[in-house]
Length: 385
Image (cartoon, rainbow, N blue to C red; front, side, top):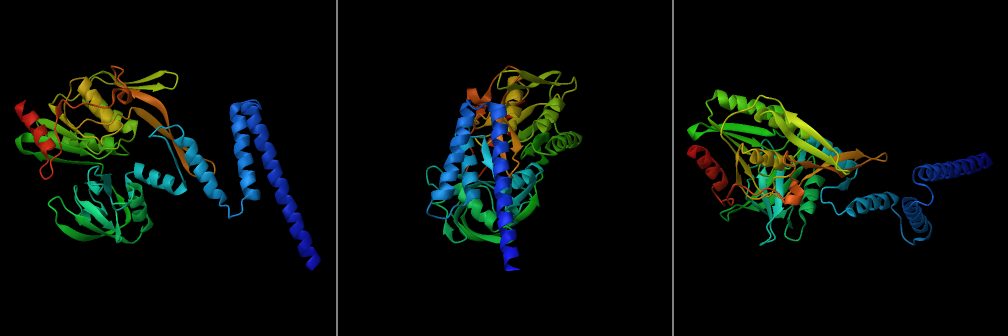
């Protein structure tokens, strides 16, 4: 009986070894058929494989093979030196898939670090989020998180601490804009983000806040425009401050509704080949203002840029960053994904926002500490018309 068990174990080990050998042989011929044995890519693959084998057989400590693979993937994409391309592990990829459907996991805040004080500041609280329910507000400074001072932490580390408490709560010590301290306990859970909120302001001005250009944002923005017109709006303010961008389809839906017939969006691939999108003849003839800041990215920047280029809206706020690249998310067979910049997007005038360094507003206004000075100026621009 003992002999049979030993025999079975030996056979199993041999089968596993043969399977590994077969996989290596198949991988060898696959790479060779694509790149050729003299290709620099093939040489680099062999070097990586050799390094992994040396580590696995000779390293004196414990080897976490999964961690080696993940760090190698991260380093490969980071070597592109493109701030918009990165590797996502399986957990991060799943969170990304949730976010593009306007489902979020966390507490619902956008963070930034004050360069002067090195403090972690909430730049926006998402509508309908646990953070909003707990009373957190834009401008609040997070002093401690779960009893840990946030000063030495990177913003990504703050997010990781929050994510680690998913299904429970986190305790934050915050200081508001007038210096008052308070302790806030916030649920960490999944929640739905309504990407578009709107209201009618004084002087028959319609205000539309577009949080992102992900799923449903296009049709919800158009619904908001129609609803505000029914309420008597005679001018519109589109607020895309802190909007990180989203899907081109949603962006084009809104641009097509607003703009007259003609080119409205241009993709250029790595070889310079262009794909042009057009608007139909229907358009919205109404005074408009767009609010932007340094946290308006991608689709939000392009939305602003084309309305400015066509003299269709007045732009108010702060200069944007210039993210003129389009990315696609490529799932990996072993889990996770790579987000990779694969094309440039251009205005009909062939302006590359990345090369231009972003958008310079027609009216530059700093954000106020207490009052929303940018929104106030946007209202004045419309009332003056």
